[in-house]
Image 1 (cartoon, rainbow over the protein chains, first blue to last red):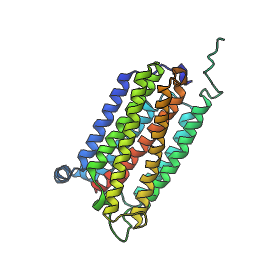
Image 2: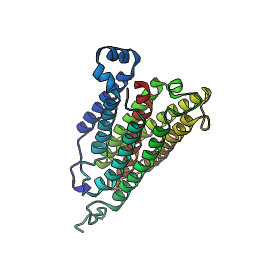
Image 3: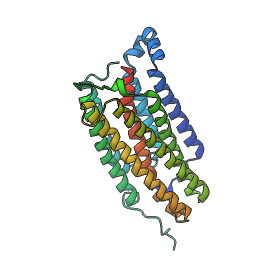
Image 4: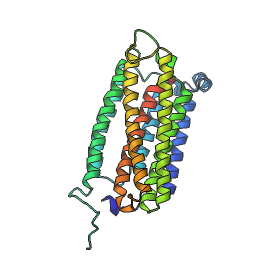
Length: 106
Length: 197
């Protein structure tokens, strides 16, 4: 029952938004042309897997907003099911379409 | 009365409105999942230009992304202060959230206008159709959220948003965070993947 939960402190929200900002900055860094040229020349593994890495960072940001800002960590049970099941289906569909259309290739 | 008149619990342990809204957000996941899926299915299949790499501007999208992300933080702060019964602070954060949404919409209008000047329209090619439908529906959701937030701001200014009505702000917050997470996915799948390839 949501009202019975202790409300999270402001410091938690600050930590979450700081983390989200850092992840987003890193995402942008990966697509800046000089940086892209540099890691393509020096880090083949990163160059080959840049799109899955971007998707994982995006999923981490998504999870952080849902879990901390939307308070799904407190609203467990039914809300997790009614939101999580269609979310899982949509995510599966997106990943399958990316695989089918070869969008994972960096 | 020992029971709080505002507390409304169900057998599932969650207020009806909140459960209903989570269910609505679940349906919205499928809605946007379908739009993103359509964009991905037709990606790279346009027979005539302009193409994504000719139109996208990473600078504009980056700024609008950070703005929407920050507005999610402003929203949790607004809810925090409504729960604490601090009316002025709650109003300020609600206004900041709505302003973040308006800035995002301003950047989106700018982007759409730029794309149009570059020859891209809804009916120009598959990219134009799928891109404008996806981002247009997201923008419409942001517009709805801004109106919702501004109405809460006015209610708060009139003293009609005491801490007993925190659920009103919490549900608006769920909606606002949802438009933010949808953008997190659109930003990666539509923009970042394009630049990374």
